[in-house]
Image (tube, rainbow, N blue to C red; front, side, top):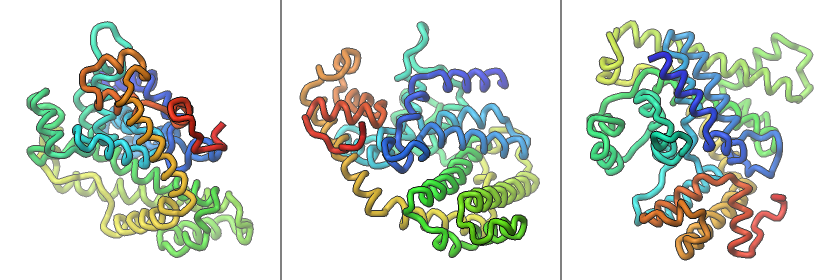
Length: 358
């Protein structure tokens, strides 16, 4: 299977949806700054972290990397604001969820090969991409693919160790880089971070090792603190997971699926990570400046959906010809980059909601 996972990774990296991630929002709309993370840089950071953790735990590095690179392929433009808006538009038509859309991208929407739709990825990579799934969606997946990707959501089993690992690598990566982007943007102050024991320990260790950073308030201190924080989280995850594997001793991947999750943090590190997420939610994701941008982004998605639903000929012919019009519209919008969505919105409505986007 090693060759299959390498092939998965290569097909993912070369697909159209992967390239589009460079112009899709992580937290800040793409035009708001050249150095803020995008969905592409986020995916690369998750992949690097997942591969390093997989190596420490002697798991399959290629599988972990392939899952990480593909996990956000289905994200809409404008991040979670775009996803939430598209879900509202699709509420009466099966809803929209970016995780399920990522699977849809690799199974059907990418059209690069003459013999099949999608990327023809291995079961294990597809399993790892689909982190969450409602029962209704799982039942539809099971109907199309008996005993396949949807089965674990119906039977209450777990995915592979590599999939479990990528889920946590995703959390670790966005905790760290959203702090970095939050400080860079001026929306999060270092003083707020020092209230978090995990960051405070990393910060104090950085100053102890490099006293010249004291009083500088510069980015070197932030970077070194974040590096040490990530190292502490990684060490905790590896130690906790290794202990769980020694205790449970699963003999193969099928045994892993029957057990409770084996990859995880210690209780104290889980608490620390949750505290980080709470800070980011309160001080960054819900900051008035970010909410102002995301509200305008929501209007862009809603307007686009209404326009294409009313006039499908405004979409490319291969989307306009599909019988399930609402799903075709959702697929088309979800594949857009931020800047293409803004151009289309202006073309179709004559309105400019982000005057500084050009």
